[in-house]
Length: 162
Image 1 (tube, rainbow, N blue to C red):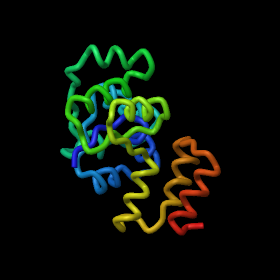
Image 2: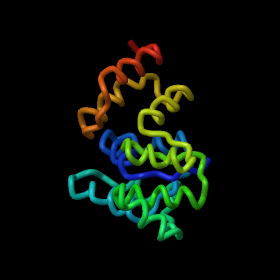
Image 3: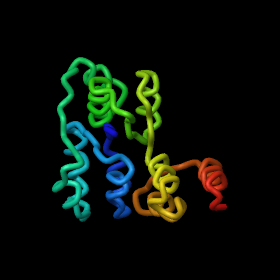
Image 4: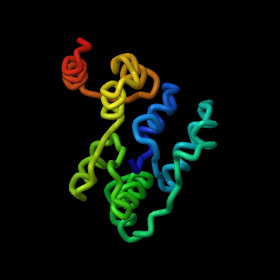
């Protein structure tokens, strides 16, 4: 399965030392150059990016639809714009994004969207992790991931963790 990803999900999983879950869930992820640049900024904050930098399961690919990148940049940040343009080109199984504006735009573009919470749910459903709550809590506390309290409760209740 091929997935195109934005920066935030990578950042979330790197900050909780669970980058390998992305590989385990998806197998292969394609990112545009801006996303690679943005993720590499985490090194300045002291995060170990060895797994991100030295891997064959993450491919950097430049989107060719530069006019679409420019059009998207009017509403989204650079990484999101490149990621959605690249996804439009290669039609991956999913676009991995967390920010609501980018998720909305991807949906309008008829792209299948999944976010960090969706990754955690898939990881639990495929027995890669026993519980979502500890990793979701870590994302909230360590990575500054934001989720509405009622949605948080709904996820955990649905998964039988509450």
